[in-house]
Image 1: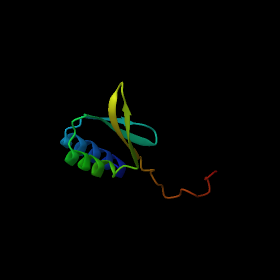
Image 2: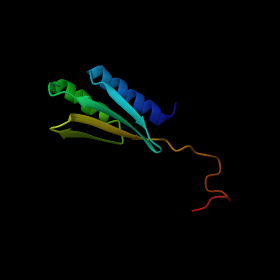
Image 3: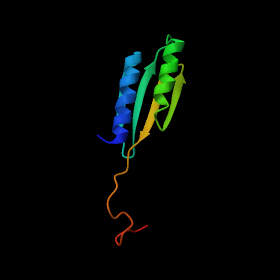
Image 4: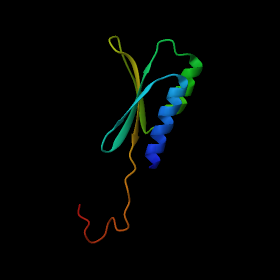
Amino acid sequence: MSASGVTVAAIAARLSAVGLPTRVEEHNRFTTVEAEVPETLSAESWREVLDVVAEADRFGLLATSLNGRTLWAVVRKTVPTTGDVGGPGYQR
């Protein structure tokens, strides 16, 4: 598993441990982790949640009166390296 995959798995596991069911979505260059946040989340749990999402490249909270609160975190995928990245066949 790539380093970014390990980070995503850790974020999802720790959010689940706080009691927030998570959704993970793969995209070409990044992976997102989302979780619905209940109104009754304790201050202690919020501190844990903020420690967890701080491991992501970006994170935020989307709050609407229609859909409640959705926490999101984005982890950029690790770009694989090759032995000759800027070699003779390299084009810009």
